[in-house]
Image (cartoon, rainbow, N blue to C red; front, side, top):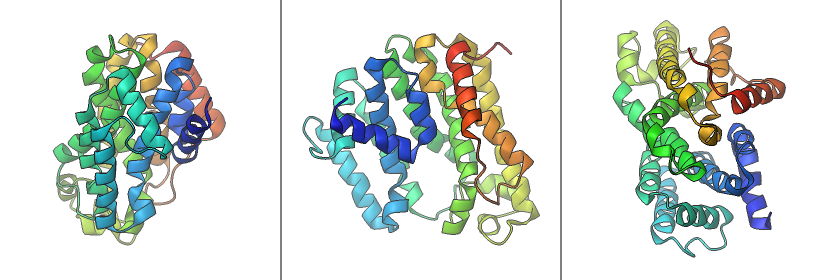
Length: 280
């Protein structure tokens, strides 16, 4: 492994350990490409944490747009930029998918409430679902298109679970990813969701968002037994989603971030990597 590839892998291990573990199940010849995609995702999803101000954050997203659009040697000297451009070129990945991911991440930089369930599902589709589909295209470009719809379900389940896990951090920022229409139906509001203990209405709304994540997860699990072995690594993060949701439901999503032990994560991933998803 080159020093540059090592840097990219280490970046994923530090910023997104769950996806780092799943990439280890990919074939040797595809692993570095997955690390490049996951490092790119970690870079753009973490912009707000590193930059804090919205306008400089948008400038950084534009830098990534320019790098992806130019391809080739663009971003030279930046290991992740070099790696993701190489992956796009090697595997013929569609650049519009990356542009849509960057556009979706503008939402992260501001405190505007998520307007509706439809908007949330669109956000999940352009971020986590797109990442799963790109990883699938790297792993098996022939089979990947057949499972694009399943990637959409998987991405919604994974992204919503992730947003629920990050609820305490988002509340500290004054940010609310629970859709406003779900909050209104529960007798709450984005303001209530980010203040104090969240209030009973906000807790009902969070429970409804958990149910929505489970709905997408169940839809994914219905179709997952058909996944070929070649595509499993792209979908492996879903092996942890049900366990994370159970952990949050048994505790308080408004408290600290729910965690799974390293042993449990390794066991869940190994089981799905080796046996896939059983028929329901």
